[in-house]
Image (tube, rainbow, N blue to C red; front, side, top):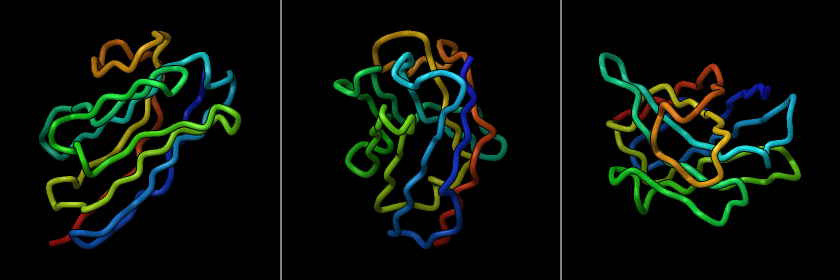
Length: 124
């Protein structure tokens, strides 16, 4: 199985940027499609973005399209989420997850392995 560790969260003002990283160990990341998800207090976990095993296909939630970019470096066993033009409503714990499927899927139940999460707080 694969172990995932997120980093890069923090406090940022509205309009600012953050770059989240998700480092994998245990198995090579190229075996998995990857996704970023978030959960705000009192809300259900939601999909933010996903990327296929090869990185050739991506998907984004409508709320982050044009602002967030998911990417991966399989040689470094790392997935990234570049977040620009951040808004207070982006405040949440962000999780990365791995799926044994090939394509970029936004379906949460298809993800088998999860990191512990990193907090992102956007102040107005």
